[in-house]
Image 1 (cartoon, rainbow, N blue to C red):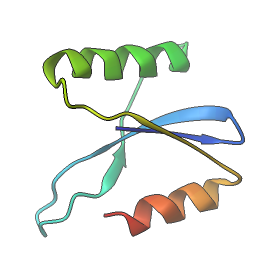
Image 2 (image 1 turned 180 degrees about the vertical axis):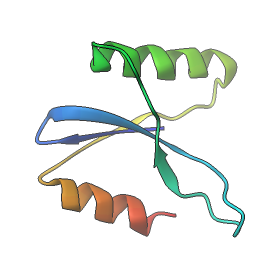
Image 3 (image 1 turned 30 degrees about the vertical axis):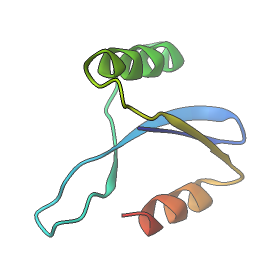
Length: 75
């Protein structure tokens, strides 16, 4: 899982999902809570209970374009 931030603001949770072409692109996880930071934390902690090898990486970048570019190059 990856938590993406732009200049420390507006966290977004991403996860890899397998696609039909054999790749595993990053896709945004839809969250509905009013407190997005708490929802992100609760989501990955719940997942970690089922997957003890889960890695959660926080990536803070300078612009939304940079984040999109990094996620696109790691498919």
